[in-house]
Image (cartoon, rainbow, N blue to C red; front, side, top):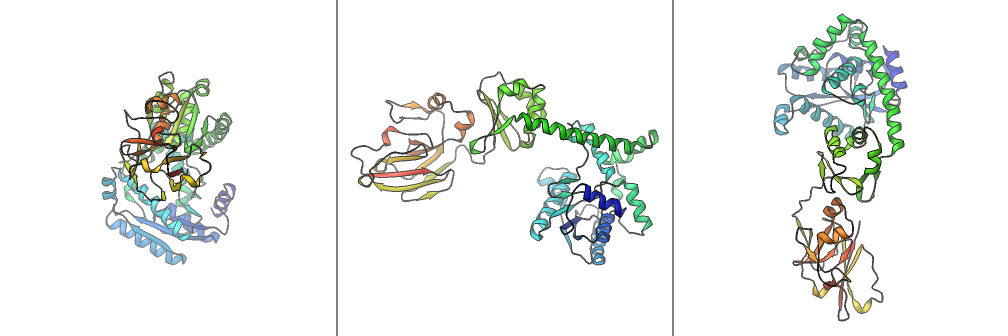
Length: 441
């Protein structure tokens, strides 16, 4: 077992011999054997245990057991108790989801605080097979059928080489004590139903099914690697200025099936396959249609799909810039400088800088988003113009319009920040005091 353990770590480059590893230890046979193997291999490690307070006395006994084990191995053990049910109700999560959030947040907290290079969990080969069937039953893509990865960012899984029976046999042979979670016998959750019902049935049908499923999982992992390489060559997703990402509609049309290509490119932003199908069915619609994920929004523009992270700022929020202020950071970073016209030989500027007649401004200045019906007097033009028309004439996308801020003097728009000042507030022959405003992106 130790030799296979070390070989798995080396083959998958899980960590280096001098790295400090945080072991997630529940008290069950999987995590206890993992800890024993870390100890026998001489690796640097500490233990972390979560008490979810879900199983009464058993939960407390598990905690005590793990603490005693840490004393045996002469290593530190980080323990925390959670009111999992309250967290579940507060965040509208299932008990399983709540426990997972609490567990991994705590792991990450300890890892950062104590400088652990990686966090090791005791997932084994049977867990990977169970995950395969869970995702298969729920409906998934190729990545969902690739089992559990051996390494995923800071999470490593050193026990994936072993089946549950191998682990239990090792514990029995070496007289290793462990705790047993009797809730694993309950078929309340899908994973338990698969573990207790489906897999034993498969064992009866085909005693060697585990190796066959493992072969399939490994084949799918390799297929996914090729699949990802092909997606990278297509370069459908492009990153542009201001953290915007775009996808060419013409390029997307050429790919079949377009919804699957789109999904693989944007699923990292929380969009599901159903949304991607809706997007592809809307490619011929007029610009402006918006599609949402929990974290991002996507807008169909004329030639592109534009993706951006959702902003927390309310569209109706107003921010004030008082007279004499030199710098503001919200909602955009602006630098204010007061100058005498007589001191400025040149009045040239760029779109990120506005030169305004200070004496005509009404303080405090207001910074806000545009509203329907807004108008201004564009510099260099006669008469007023609706902002909606100005945006259309200058081919603003829906996202560019929503990200544009206005600097207002009372009810007047003095500057469409980053684009055009108002004719009424420009520097004139009789101007004496100038307010220079720079947009610091």
